[in-house]
Image (cartoon, rainbow, N blue to C red; front, side):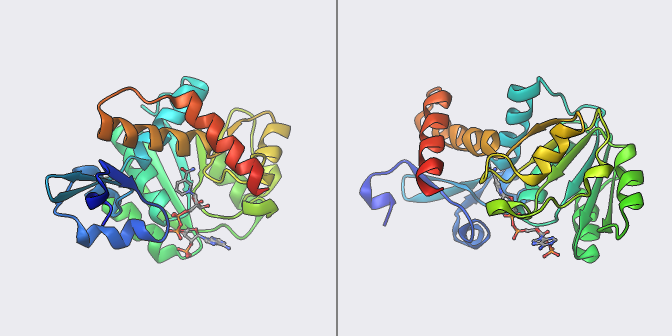
Length: 231
Ligand code: NAP
């Protein structure tokens, strides 16, 4: 239907990303590894499925902090679609260690296994603040890839576990200042929300369809306007 409208492609979000996998004629390696499609390109009657989420995430870190993931020790909270995209992108970018921490420990272990090398491990959520502190003491980057904190919800991590020097990336973008980001900044951590990733993944999709540089700042402005209207 969308291809008959003359569109070059479409960008997908929850709950279509996983469902779209089996409908594609071609999957890029990024989509296969992410287990999800967020960018569909219509190519002469065939559909190519790609995922720009992981690359968008890395670009948001680079744009925000000049961050390089090479050698980084990372804790990823969550083991769903977003965690998977981010974890694979970090592994490809040379992260030294990736700890996947999830409510369902089996899903954390499965994601760590699928990352397929000695750098990754999976576990359940720590039950005590002291265990959170211990786990994060040896991390350079914490990524919240769960929906905890959306719409004014609590932080997924006890504030006292956030040590100065830790960089915190919350994939949640609504609200812009999540409880996790506020706690992180109060503890002297660098912190960014999911806006940058959302904009960058969209910009990468647009560039794939148009083969032109995307107007990233225009897109960021449009997103902020839309979020303000919603809130
Ligand atoms: P998903 O596939 O449904 O995965 C959700 C993950 O969060 C699972 O690991 C789940 O644990 C965990 N979780 C959910 N509710 C929880 C709770 N109450 N307590 C503890 N853990 C909980 O969702 P997703 O697509 O990965 O998205 C995750 C978040 O990332 C959402 O907030 C989404 O908006 C955001 N996101 C942002 C961008 C962006 O561009 N900024 C892109 C994609 C996603 P279990 O495995 O135990 O169920």
